[in-house]
Length: 403
Image (cartoon, rainbow, N blue to C red; front, side):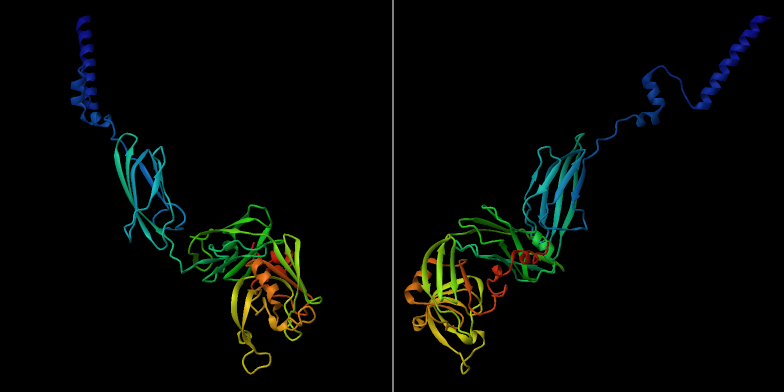
């Protein structure tokens, strides 16, 4: 009686196992190949994913207008750049650049153009060997206008005197003086503190606290390209200039004694008899800086408003002329006033010299050298009158800076 009962129990267990297998949808097999054939869905789940391409970032992003003095950069993650091509879409001109040794960063070199679109093409290889490609575009800002910075003294100038200010003149006004000034730099190999002074929105001057040190070499940098100078006016270009300062030639003209002393690096060289402006046309007082010299010019009082038929009118050829202001003041030869030189002031504001003295002055003084006038009875030379920069005390000069 016990055997049949045991068989029934075994049959029952086997039946349950078969039913469980059917219910789970599982086929039991000892052969791996057979198992794979029986589980096609599982076979695709465990297959290896294809290698991913490198991720590429182009900066700045499309739709952002960039400063053309900044570089375009291409960076990769999860792979390297094999080739990067950037071209100006308007001209087709290629943009040079360098790829980092690890192949992850490409950077353009050199300035880009204003109001331009650049096409960027990048070929990559992912870490798993998968090739990839990415295209993009970059746009640069479009200025309302561009301001070109002219420099005085000009790059072609020979050495200049210790009184020569550094002048930047713009062909369009700049309204953001502070930003503009941050991009103007003057350095000297003989260290001197200096500061900028804005005469107007299109002209700014730089000078040290006292005259430049003789023998100095100055470096002037206008780092303005790509800079918004205010109201959408951008700098047209960067410029660099080297300025040489020669010996310190300073003349001291005294209207009371009617004498002028000439100094070379602080050493008195000679003393000359002079005649300054008459009481009706007194010479300006203060330091004057020579801005030009000519062997002969025709002086015409009509250039400053005294024309033919008016009292004080003159028009005559004058020799050995060195301009010390734009108000008609020169140091020059005046053979007609030799009798008054050393005794009375009879000129129209100029420093009159005997021909031999004028020749000596002309031979030794030039652009940037200084003529200091005292006791003339005239007003101070205006700071804006080329070049009245040294009329202002240092503390007042510094207030003319935008920073």
